Image 1: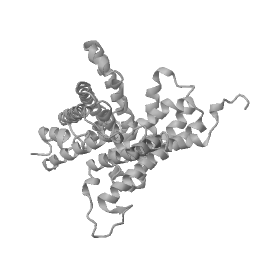
Image 2: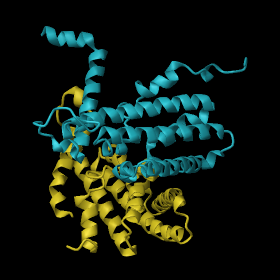
Image 3: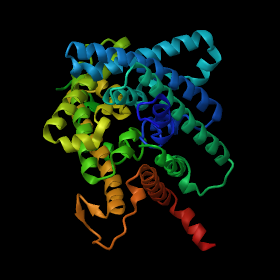
Image 4: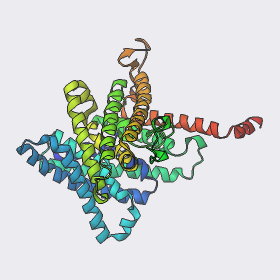
Length: 193
Length: 216
């Protein structure tokens, strides 16, 4: 597969260099929202939507900044774009799906400080992707995030019934689980370049 | 000075609580992304810790100085702009000092912006306290974060490449556990540290329960 092809970019972001399990981006929601399968899915979809919007905006803004020699403002403008994208998703969700809006609650505004989204914007700039490639990258990263979140939530729902030593309850156990998942995802490394 | 409130006084605790009782990583589980991502060697861990501490102190000072000027409605946006400014400074400084280090840390320097510790401290502490107190507390939190990074970084470098700060520790015959410097190692080592702290806390909390178990 050619390194610039859209399928390659998509698979690379979703599986080989999975944002959560290989690049350590977005660990906070990964550990925080993965207790229930249902919330995990809706959180993942919301995050993917924000990723898509902010990736497109970041692409446009970067072109503007480069044209005017203002690259030092990149970080500040990206974070402003992401905050507005989150606001946009939040408002449209409130309008079109109030039940989902209530279910996600506090986690929606917290998408702003999800480093996977800023990371995505920064990586696509560093890799100098064009518009279509950026969209493919954002879709891949979003699906990878959903995949990791759903896998983790499925495991944790089963684990609730298991008897574990009291020392290993909570975050320690989740991290060990994440380590094993990450180990499994390393098996895909051969696919990448 | 007579009007100064009691909670304005800076004690050793202002500094120390960030290191132990409210350690951002081990107790509050904040800012996990850089903790896991850049701790594959001690050098990276130190650099990341110092960079984060600088941003934490800088933004705490500015937020604390401006706490009566910033309107309530736009405070979060203001904090983020302040933090992003300091991160941009750090980004350029590290680039000037060592390009190798800059490449090793990658995007994680710029990602300090979205480190929840910094925004959390700005919102919960710096916006309610005098500048000097905010600085001392920021220094404590930053040290706590750096220590946590060092805890992870030293274990991972020791096991993963058999070295410490680049110097060989176990000698040439040591077979490195490569998995430790790869992503899964980060999860495992942090999980192990949390297990250790859980165990210590539980042992401290119930000595009599432990005796009961032993008596059986």
